[in-house]
Amino acid sequence: MYHAIAGPDSVLGKMLRAAKLEIGLYDEVRHESASTSEAFQAIVIIAISAGLGRAIGSLDRGIGVAGATLAVAVVAALISWVVMSVATYFVATAILGGKASPGALLRVLAFAEAPTVLNLLRFVPILGTVVVSLTFGWTLITLIVALRQALDVGTGRAIATAVLAFIPTLVVGTIVAFPLVLLRG
Image 1 (spheres, helix red, strand yellow):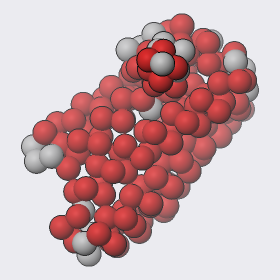
Image 2 (cartoon, rainbow, N blue to C red):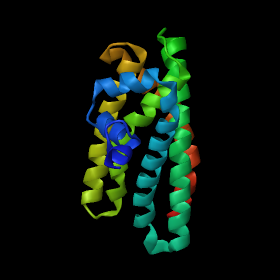
Image 3 (spheres, one colour):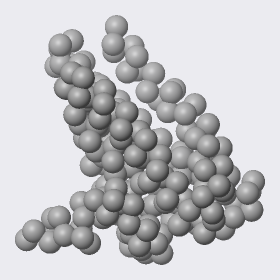
Image 4 (tube, one colour):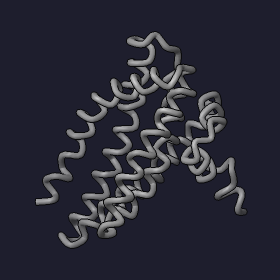
């Protein structure tokens, strides 16, 4: 039973392998279209965890605000994942002349977000700020490794792709997450 839930080939196991920067994991999910559903499960787990961290932190404004915060955070994370994947595909293929498939990018980028699951702890005073800062840096590193593997490029091109793809993702993410700002009152 353990291996079905948290073994190395389970969704949680793959998330852990991604967070540990196991290059083989990124190669594996890049080539396995069957991993798309697992990537979606991973991004949902990540989005809910990070969203719960925000929602718990907003409980002082009422359960309704906390529920809305969770919903908006999850939707924003899912939309950002898709936008980042599409933007990365465009940047990698049209601008930098690389080769990739949209599905491969969806899969590797979902697992690259694995460290963000720790943002569940963001509501804890002081520790939350440290965790969010650390997971941001950690996720940048996993993103670069994932792109390097998915695109068969060097680190420099992976960084350039990430930076260029992040711009439209930030714009769309800001628009989608704007209700969170309104909820803060």
